[in-house]
Image (tube, rainbow, N blue to C red; front, side):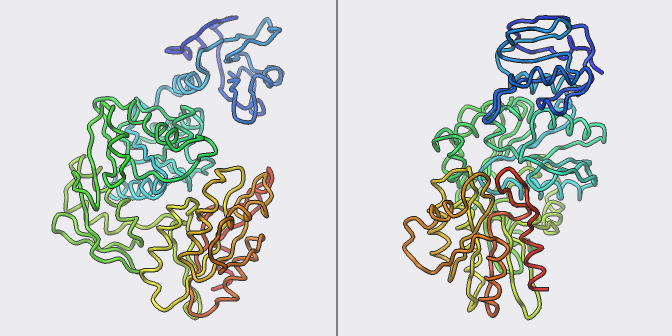
Length: 479
């Protein structure tokens, strides 16, 4: 229980109607979750307006409403607080409710189009190997030391975020490694002023359904760095031409890394095979079990942070060599008779191209077969780009359903093959059937890439999550 007056510390308030000395037992922005003496945030979102659910929240026991417009009729025993910025208020009140946990833990936020999950996962493994108590918030899973929590969003909403952070603090975690999506930055689910270090991986075509223009997308990422304080660190990929723009106004301490351009931290790829990478750091060669040239950047981001924090260099390289790839990220599945399947989360043109180009390096005389689709209710402009990339680098492609959501899967595939210049493809909208068909048709001497969903264990069809797991589907076929 917290006193309402204490929760309002630092909030820009326009009007208060009611008592602020009352106790609040919980906070939520979902009227379904309201219990007695809860505070309810009426958020105007993309699909719903929380103001429409104020009465429902009150009936379920809410004693406080945070809103940007007052209801026409006010309940006598309810406190209404009119605020200037509802999302800023949700973050600050949530932080106050959970005892401002972000001030008690070092938050390392990773942002960029591709590589966020891998960098966070590598950082979590790496710091744990130094016996540090750490937490992780990622697309795949959330963790508090060895405790596993389910992940719902790339970056959770501020209420859930502060709750998880508080659990990390109570578990004596020193660091929290987390993904920071552009949506989360825009919706103030994460605020730069509370970040210890921000890492930028890269930027490419994605989320234009939400941000409308690529410049808007870049600028949302930039906000994270603009908000960093002078005791924080910015660690940016110098090989991405937008990196300088992202940190041009930051007050933080800026460090750069790269493979092509000379930064504060660099590495060189000596070998890249199906068995892993061999990288050179300052004349020291390190062999890794991690596959794919793009992962050299992800590993270098880890190396950069560890070096900034003055970890022993020899220990850094030793521990880096022991890192493993996260589930569903360029994950190899080898079965009977040397059948090879690869599962990857690639769902942007750039990510798909990177995966395919890396497979071409070691496929030798094997055929490269790709099973891929595109998400519904998302950026439509990337669909034909992904289609052409798949067709250009694959010997054959099966276009299928991804997470169609509220779109017709056939319409999505029509967008994917729009402008296709090659005809080496077949359409099978049932994803499980498409995977089975790929292995049946190209059983021998082939590498079959199933892209787009990676670690996910469901398909979103309409408003329902239907059980589906690319990895398990492949295992049943090849093992």
